[in-house]
Length: 486
Image (cartoon, rainbow, N blue to C red; front, side, top):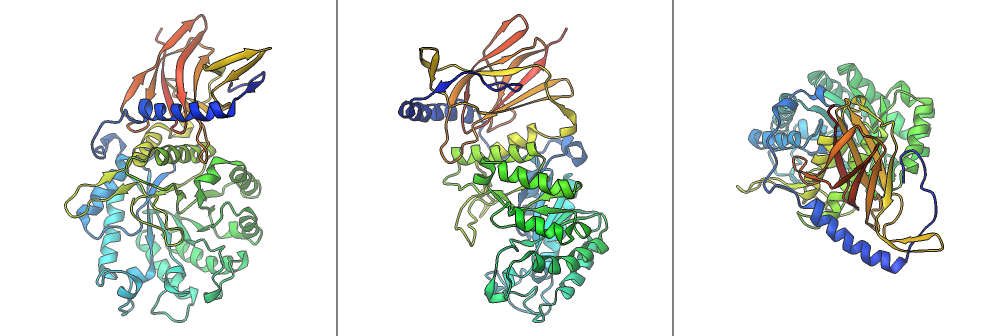
């Protein structure tokens, strides 16, 4: 398969044989690529990364409520920064920051004494430490889902204007320190008990006073409505835009399960339709991927998280927050899809393979303005031919892995390869032909430790470099080439 042309000729597959060999190859890929990681915890932050302007990328993690202990907050944010995140993402609720004289922590499932001043102090630490580490801050501000249809359990009026007044003061306090706000969560759902139908009209009626208040408090902050359920929910979002959303917001937001990212047609269609009528719109979210974690070293989760992060970066999505805590289970789905187990009871934090895979993507693909597409042809050729009968090749490797190539500042060539097949992972071995004599010494970047690289076997002929025996599967293959010195 070529970046410049479609593969010619027929390729046939023997289904049972392909399944068996693919399974074997998947294991081999896991051993040869996935376990090049250096043992240990999260790496120390690179001092070169202390200014977030040096890296423009969507990478972020959701930390829910910032830890009340300053040392724990710093450790968590430092590890997030070292992972390559350009943003941190937290939830903010009026009822956590201000109790209005109420005593309701226990009935909401929280330890008494956490709300009010302790929550405000924890958030102050979160903002200050994020800024010190060079990360932009983003927040999701709650609406009524956690408080039985009210914006605050002590405000029985349910008047959005009172909540908006509080948010105006909040935005003013953190003016210039919060890059974007996402208002609410999955408001396209209906909640009959609270007389919420989930229509675009209802959402916009609630959103407008909140967005105005945030912009009043911080004119430079970006604001979007809630991430939609069953995203991309294209018709619902387009109806919001028809009703006048661009006059009050800076973008839209979605949740994407990894199955949605596996098939990009709907997501790309949403982006095309939004940009056709709102060219400057941003694309945000509260969380993405949602890949279940069965154990700390979950090969499948690592591959899918890495592919989701790369794919949304590649198509130009503006924010990719993935959930942090490994043992947090959602109220709706009871899934366990987090990336880490934080330090508890004197035990150090544990970082999953998915965390490390996300770090490799974040440390490799960023600053899109610095990247250019190669002008020469790059072609993949299947290496595992079973037979050729009457001109038809029978092969093991499934066709058409995703292949993307970028040149950074004329110094490094990066090539990304993966099978974006999450439901039924496949694998195959390929040779890669580059019709150029400008690049050399390809190295495989370990998906589980971006600092570890392994030389690849090559063959040079006049005007062409062939990289031999590249195992492609669920775990992305990332190759780095150096420019030939003359």
